[in-house]
Length: 441
Image (cartoon, rainbow, N blue to C red; front, side, top):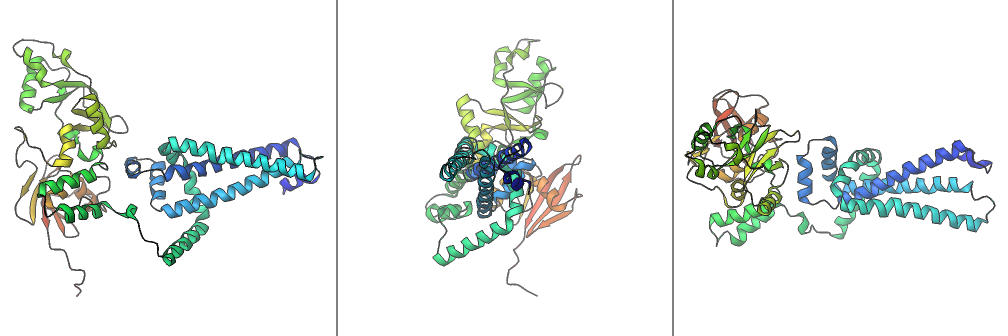
């Protein structure tokens, strides 16, 4: 009411003008966010969406939830943007009316049109969309809380629009395009096209290439519990013995603990000095390369190639060491396990028969699926944030299981064989016959 009263006398008070300006600026900010969000969300590719899923913060979770219903998201943005733009037109006209007294009605109308159009085009279209195009991930995260609130406010209208558009599409006979094909569809296509002429290894390589761009470092890294490092305060003889026992060509050097990595040691650098007593081996330490656990291995492979390195220390969002990742780990995602002279053949996997397997608890879920011939997303519904078989069992059980306890999911039985220091060491996986959907008592 106070907005109408402000214009009734033809003269604005300073307080009313201030309020109108604040309202207009707020509305311009909201229309900029909605316009930018539209560009940002619908320019994200599959890799960007997967990256959002690895982020553990409220904005990322909200953005991921919004993207799960793209039609509803688009309808919400369009409805909200229209409401906001109408409010800007009305409010701006009210503000300008007090300053255009004395002008002819036509001239005043034209001034209002030019002013409102300028504001909407510049601040509601051009600037936010240019920014969102260049910073789509940042804009998506920034806009997520606002769009989430708008979706709650306008959901009845948005849902009605989505239902209407779906009904029209069905009546027009719209068919899903290639964009709706999933990885499973592509894998099935690979089986049909090359499965009869190529070897099983070649087919697996094709499938590995298909999934390569969506795998993060966290999914393939060696966790810190399995990392062998060199304490900074060791003497040369101790370091030599440690590297011989470990059998690795590259090892991290740390102060106090693995969260304080000081650099890397290449064991080949010791060769010229192996006969020198009390050699200061610290002069051989090379800078360590750090990567975030959410980085995609496709990008990491390019960085390895560019920097000509084979080894990186993986850190989490708090800067602590999560583990290590090597070039070999990356290549194994395409061509399968690579065995060298230091690998023990059956260290993490033993096949008893076609229905029974024994795995180490630290074995990655993706590797388990590959070894038993199942799709990589077989346990997607229950794996949560876990990457290893032990973590999967904890997610399914909801508690720490005892030795010989069996945890079941669908037709898979996981029996814990060995536990050491609150860590699941070995697991027996039994694959039962799936229950027939038509079988009823």
